[in-house]
Length: 287
Image (cartoon, rainbow, N blue to C red; front, side, top):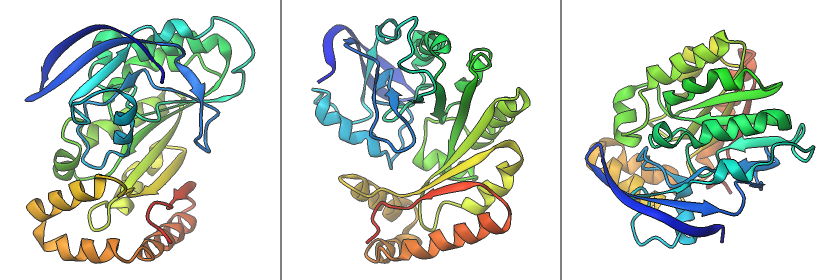
């Protein structure tokens, strides 16, 4: 358990959603990672304000001592920047990722600026930094990212159609604004990646995303839908109520996990044929 002390609590009304905000302290902001692409991770917040119906990070609720539903609370690790050392070689050239179970640029970052402060503390430690977000607030810190010798900034895109984004990621930044954000980083000479995920069968137009963004990014990560826990129930509820014509096909797809193989092979063929560098991480739900 990394929660030490709840310092302050308050309620905010965010785009018609009531969210409980708690300011807490943590023992250490930068911790060892179990992810294959990173050595350490930093999560300045617990929870998120994007409202994504497919969010895999909801498992964090069982570690948070919250009774509220996932998405109805945010814990702000108010002291997280101060736990990062000013000097030392421990993190030099090590892969450090922001963030694994939250968005480092969720809306509260405008107020708290924890991510910006963390980045400033990381610069002299010379890590191999990677940051991923769904928020155009990412652009605010271009000046800090330029100070890193090794840095990749990523944007998650699940659909190129903003109408769908409003249904599945209602409080994340619009799709075109995310693409413009990636363009800005590329223009400033900062390496970029795009995370296409989750790939939702019958909904994620991955080929359109590749075509729209190929000029502005160095690399893609592409991951399929995780339907563990309550995610499957929420996805089925959404499709049944908003896209009834796809409901039976979606059920059939989920009951036949090998169906993912067809999409995976199609993506591999397309990316290889077009010289697109991508890592395809299709592991959720496959046999």
